[in-house]
Structures are given as structure tokens and as C-alpha cells.
Length: 141
Image (cartoon, rainbow, N blue to C red; front, side):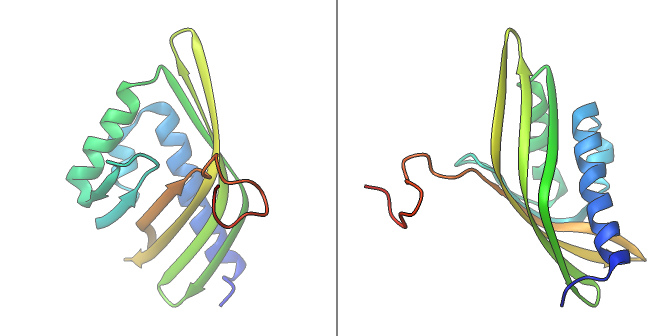
């Protein structure tokens, strides 16, 4: 099920487009990367979104709370079967907020569907490791 190089490159191009458009604050461009029924789960308790209207609300909120933002991906792996692909990667998100800067490292998973020859995000989930859980532990103390 490992994705061929063409599929892997196409899926990663969608993710790079997402990072580029997010850093530019291009909400309309971001929404064009998603399937209309996409499900998006962010790192916050209330970041549970379904469909483009809810996704728009989330992205508008995200961007309204920062002066600058960037995303970088690493350790990506893409698998596929027909017109469905899924991937996982690590990410680093950086945000400038007034006088302070924030850098968060986390993990991301995504499911992509091919619609009319174009890969789109159908589901994405960003997470940040639970800080109280020590390395090597399955459960925090």
C-alpha cells in the first residue's frame, strides 16, 4: 500500500500548498484544498470541525490570533489505495504574536481523496504530545 512516487509527491504538494497558503493568510486558497465534507481536528478541545463552513470559522480564528504563522513537515509517510491516500508526519508550527513567538512541535495525520484527478484533504488531525507523559510511559503519573 506504499504510495507510488507520483501519488506521494501529489499528496505532499497539497500539504506544502496548505502551509504556504496558511502563512499567507489565504483562506479561500486553503478551503480549495479540502473536500466539501472534510473533517478537521485541531489541538484545542473545541477544534472539531466538519465541512467548509466550520473549517472557514476555524481558519479565520487561527489567523486572527497571530501576526505571522508558518508550518513545516518532516518524517512524512504516504500510503494509498486507489483514489484514497493517507499520511502521517511530524510538524513544527511557528507563530508570531506581538512581542512573543511560539513554536509547537506535533504530529499530523491526513486522509486524501482524489476528485476529478486532484488530491484533496478529506480528514486531518493535528496533535501535540501530552507534556506530562514521560518518554517510555504509556500513561502519565
